[in-house]
Amino acid sequence: MRQFLTLLTALGLFAAAPLTAQQFEVKPGPEHAFLKEGEGTWDATAKSMGKESKGTLSCKMALNGLWLLEQYQGEAEGVAFEGRGATSYDPAKKKFVNVWIDSMVTSPMVSEGTYDKEKKILTLLGNMPMPDGKSMKTTITIAYKDANTKVLSLKGNMDGKEFEMVEITYKRRAK
Image (cartoon, rainbow, N blue to C red; front, side, top):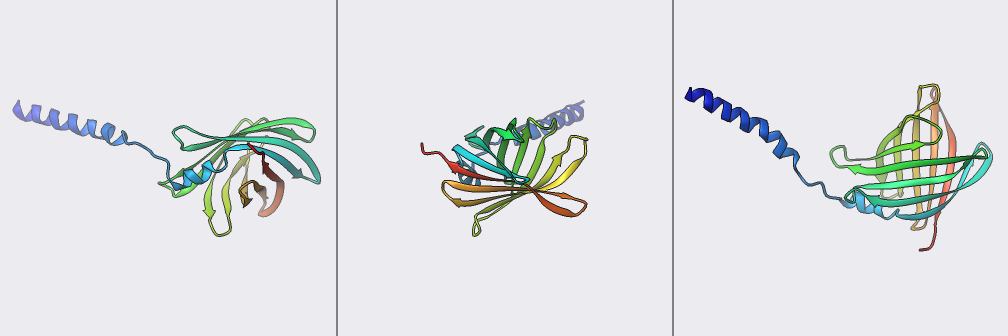
């Protein structure tokens, strides 16, 4: 009976160990500080298929300083368009991660990538859901021109051929 109680105690401690190990505090790192620099309201000029449209991007760090939450409102092809993004840095993967949803699709686009400090370019690779249920490989680059100007380029890849879908120039509004 004593061995049985010892075994139960050991199993109880073993079972409790994962719960204790999961109770660690996640703190923002330098990559999150980089994302925080993007807070604010940005005026957007989007160019796609020879047409230009305007929009607004609002960005705010949230969720314990771990996620930059983005809210875009504008138009696409003369139709109201809105989207939401969430960007963070995953220290386990050593990559930035992004989830994007918008008013044109019912599935999220998930991307991940790296930031080149010398070139000041964030590159995210992902898969964009298409209305037919399929997905298309995408590359998003965000070139940081200065503290108040950034240019996002979204390129798609179909049948091994890359093409630009949209380029958006963002100018930060003065506070």
